[in-house]
Length: 301
Length: 281
Picture 1 (tube, rainbow over the protein chains, first blue to last red):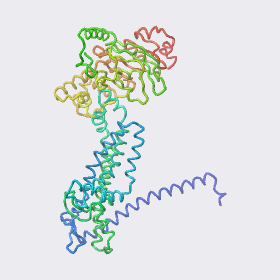
Picture 2 (cartoon, rainbow over the protein chains, first blue to last red):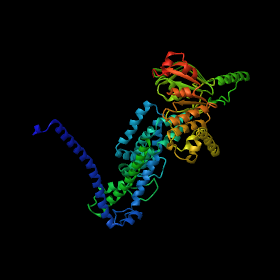
Picture 3 (cartoon, each protein chain N blue to C red):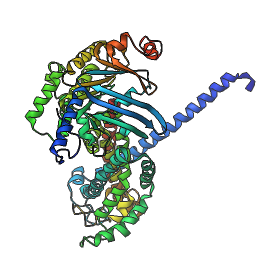
Picture 4 (cartoon, one colour):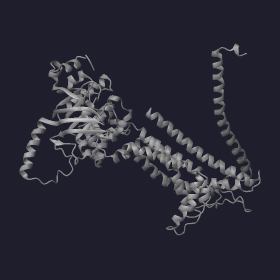
């Protein structure tokens, strides 16, 4: 049998097998994505058959596990947005400063140490961050914010901010680094100081890349689960007060998934409705950042 | 035009006589030798890129630097506005003087120096901003905010490079939409806007088509009335056409430096002759 194939035919066969194998692995990821969207949608549709979509977006209480049931997703959404907002407010200035420092000021040897060190921040398991927020940051903040509850969005948000610093700084640094050297020379040649060069020329020139890094960081913060589940509490509450316990969409999903809610019940379906809300948010953010990145790539090529 | 790139010169107390003497010397120097290099050696780590050059460059003339790639002419040019400072391992021995003042002294303010010594680069490098913002940039970073002054200055500078009529309608459009030749003239306008007295040009036409090149050459020729111009070029016809003096560099040394007419028709050194007749390089 083997002798019928020449060396070249064998090689061609091998190529085909490998190609199909690679294609199959690519298809698996697409299939999984489609599967997730399908399951989310089907369960969410079943949910919305019982709960009006208007109530879902206008009710200000989220109490599906109690006898007096309310399904106001805004309550969970406020927890998610509040913690994410605190994280972003903290991470963007810090991350951007780090990226400017690394890209324009730091000596080459220092850059070699600090970049991997920063990326290590992203490698810390999020459960450790959550633990850190609950047992270190909250007690520390309580020493000068007297009314701070044991679970609160402030310390969860700050620690989440620490976690996403590398997302901002690393991608922003790449964007700054990609600005052609000729622009730096032009700026210095006109008599710019380093600071003027950084803020008047490089940051505007790299703005699309920096915006992408911020959007991805937001998307990461919105989807983050462990830190907020541990440190922000599990009390759905429509509030902008960072010192009280809140519950985020992700934390609610954890709570229900770990509880003893009956499969197929309305309570069970709430997590799919909450999940699809979350998914739509991160999907939109990722799409925006993809668009910007594409535009950005065209600009420099 | 008085050079003021040293911090604190204004407030220094000198005996009047000494100051007067110094002024006279400065003025004489300025009239004759705007830029001077004294026993200049440049090292990149252990590599010696410039091997001891003495040179005087005259005011309000165009001086061309020619020589094969890697001969050190660009490095030498960039000494005059300290652009080599950013190169890793760069070290200078000797002195570079502008109007008789050593620009590598500690107290020299490099940003101030660069406002007096403008530079135009090989590839047109406008900022990704509007045409207006490009020209106003140098003034804005000096803290000038007066809108009318800025607008007037932008217009004047663009007129000086003959770009005003081409772009006056599109002044707020992106500079990146201009053609390569227009971009390079914009870069020259941007440099002129901060009123330097010296302009360094590092192969300013090597990335341009012949028509744009001709326009820029014409412009350079007009500019020499007001400015001292040093231009690095690979194009010997260009050096011959526009420059008053030409310096031939080879392997980090200044081989020959003379009036362009003399250097191109009757060079002293064999190496120069070989180079300009195209026998090497």
